[in-house]
Image (cartoon, rainbow, N blue to C red; front, side, top):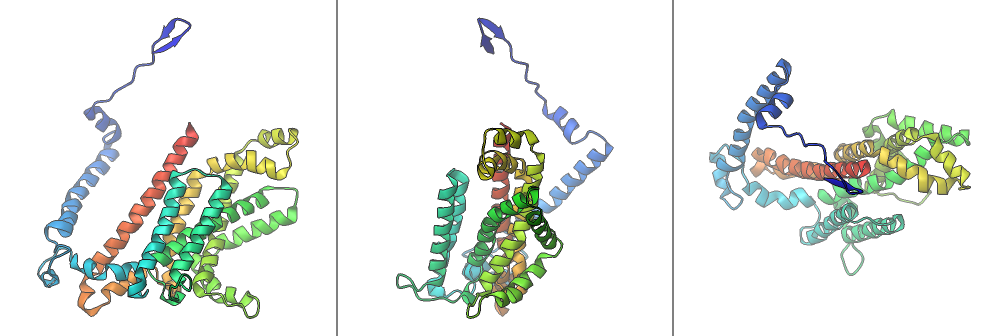
Length: 361
């Protein structure tokens, strides 16, 4: 009920659908929908019991005897008991793996903090820089009495988080600059350079960019400067993702009406205050679906680094079941990795939907 000036206005009635009517509208509207619905239900009735049987009913428990794994068709969870640390941290020295675990928690905590806590840009930059420094200090050592661990021994989840999270974080502001450069018309040379870079990167596969980062990038460094392969790949990923972020953001810039920029000009604002205070916030809101699509895609595409010899979590999963005594249990290893990917991507997707709902308010 809404009360205005002693007048009561009734709210429109809320239309409620029963279960049967909802199913008829959403699942059995026509013949094609009915066929699809029945097919999906039959598939679920077949696959769900089989998965649960493999995972639980026919499986050997985590603390069970691994010898029983050879007598059952279910999962062998003792494999995870023996190989979980290898999957997570690879060849990182066993007695120092607490450092790798702590470094992973730093990155996960950083992402969680940025999701649940709104903060100013300058504090976000400081938080990213501090987290990156702590991550490298923990993984590399040579500070606070920690022994040095060379980057060739960095494997598994820490490497995956380093390459995915930090490359995407660095690519986003670079993508904003590229989008702004390509969107403006005052400096044609700058616009053409930005457009050329974006189209070049988007026109070649990620794998080629990774090879260029691994073999070409160190060659253009100053004489006497050595770039670790891991960090060369990090830079290559950053440059690749920046081009896609740039196009996502440029799409948002093109949706804005000219009156927005003209109103800022009428207030006497210079270029950067106009962009940072008026144009860019609106463009980023319009670009949210595309940005999160690129974010999740880039996050998953990091697994391609295995082809250039960087051992991420998929590579260490393969290490785990390459042991002659455990070669039958690759499914358990990849199931563990798949759960990680699914949960992390679902969290990113849910956060993206949350931001879109806030934008719609």
